[in-house]
Image (cartoon, rainbow, N blue to C red; front, side, top):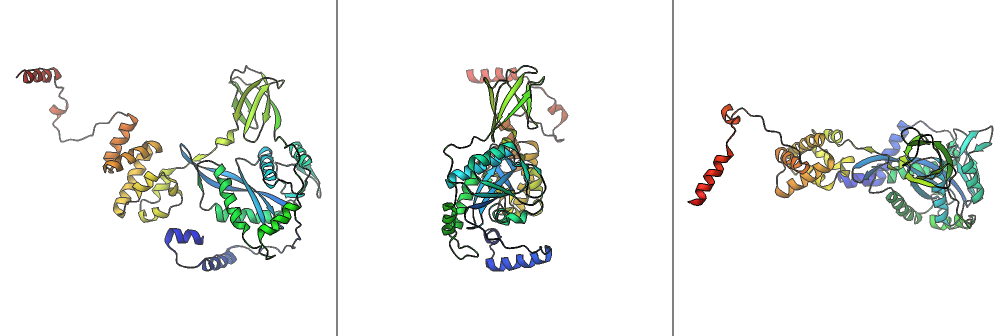
Length: 416
């Protein structure tokens, strides 16, 4: 919060003042929590938790999507690894854990989890759980002990939950803008490298030094990595599609009622004939491309009467640079007029076309609505609509000139 206040409004106070203010508000707004027992954490023991984060993905069309942040924290050292995944299903969970094991070059001896559906099929009495087969095989392969919290008692793995909250507040607010989801992992690794130079809040030793003891207590990696995938079968319907995990996939060349064998991975699915011998198709999973387009019109309408505030608007920072340059006119009256112009253009044309027209308008100094409308129509090859006006006499408006007469006059003039 302090960083944002300094960058966006030129706040002159210290971060301690901001912390004191937040602490006072927190005391008023949040009910006191029940007392918990302090636990003695051992090296090499990890806790895992999921958290959601809203991200702005700027590809061909800028859109927002919810990304699932998988956090593995080591309470002994207070260090943590992060992976950003498109879903919280079993395949994504295990692919994220496998990637973390490979980065660590080892496996935690024990990992604490919630009773998440990606791992647990049924919660029995006490500590007994029925695990789904893919998660159980993964545990056997990497030889770690999986421990699950008492239902409703996430505080039993408070290190992971606190770390998820810390990362959300410090790294994901406001929403990050990326070109691809892999950038989120790269940024998280930079933040982790920065934290390693800090001192542990209780032990007064460097986090990097304590994490070295965590790594020394890890199990060795198996010689061969586990292939994270599950098997499924389906039957082709009359439109040539099969349903896998509630999503429909089109199988090119498949016939009605043909049996299909599918190998389901975290990011894609491979489809075979019913015997698993002939590869028919490989397709990305549906959620890989999931995302909700940002309604820029609604976002801009909030600032028609507050043009000065647009400089600090979180979402509008994710507009293309040309549009931001156009909106941030020095004069507030001009800025208000440009906001209205942009809203009108976006209601009628796609963002990319509006961006191109405004870029052309800025280059020639024509930024009024009529000029930009003319440019965007030229870019899209749309037929122009004649302007309605009542000043021209009807006889002139309806006149259809004989263009042949002009040609004859031109020929006479040329001869002379």
